[in-house]
Length: 299
Image 1: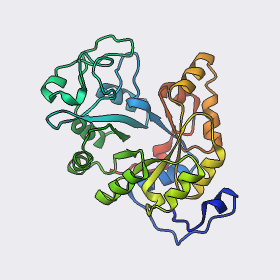
Image 2: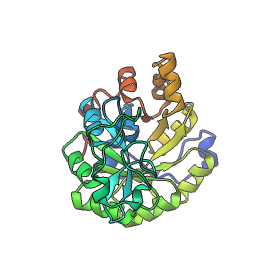
Image 3: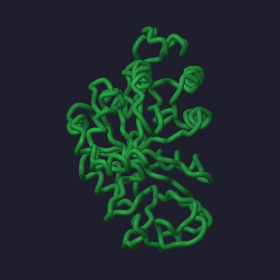
Image 4: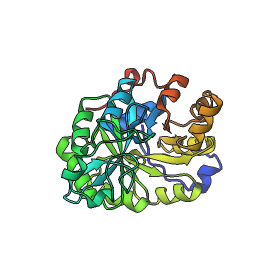
C-alpha cells in the first residue's frame, strides 16, 4: 500500500523511519504495483516494445511476441501525424526503422500507414506502423501494461482522451519527463499512473513538495549501476523504483554473457527493470514468473 509521508528528505536520507499518514486503500493499476513491491516481485519493462530479429521496435507484432513470453510492461513511443492520428514510432525522422523519408510528424496518416517497418539491420518487413488506438484496444484483453513515451509535438490531451475513450486507464501509463508535466497530467486525469524521473535527493525533495501523491507514480531512477539506497528510500515512500539497463549495460552483459548481473538489480531493491533484452532478463530472473498469480492485474 502506498502512503503519503510528511518528512523532510534530509531525514529520509539519513535512514530515519519516515512518519506516515493513516493508510489509504488503493485500487486499479496503483494497487497492482503496490502488490508487486510488497511481495518482493520484479516486473520487466520491454524497451520500445521488445524488438527482436524478427519483429521491429514499436510494432504490434513485437508487443504480441513479448506478451506471449509472459507478463511485461511495454514501453512504446507515441507521435502524431500531420492530420492528428496517434501512432507508434520512436525516431523524429523516418528511414531508420521504416521505408519512409522525412519527418514523421510532417506526414499524413495515409502516407505513414503505407510504409513498411524495418528491423535493426535495416531489413524490410511486411509489418506496418500501428495506430495507438489499435494498440490500446489490444492491450485491454492482454496481460500487459503500456508505458507511453510521448514525443515532442504530440498532443497530451489527445492521448489522454484516447485512453479514456478506449477504457484503458488501468492498462496505460504516461512517462513524465518533468515534475511540471506530471502535475499537469494529474490535473487532467488523476486516475492515470505516471512514471517520473527521481534519481537524487533534489528530485525526491521536489516530488515531496509537489502535491502529487506517492500512489500516483512509479520512479525512473536512470540507466546504469544499481542504486540500493535510492531504491530503499523510494520503497519506504511507497514508490516503485525502476532501474534501466538499455543500451551499454545490456550490450556489456550480452557480450560477457554475465546474465546474473540482472539479479543484482533485483537484490538491490529495484521493483521494475527496463531493458532492451527482455528474453535474456526473463531467463535470468525468477521473481517475475508468478506475478499474476500473486498480484491481480486490473481490467
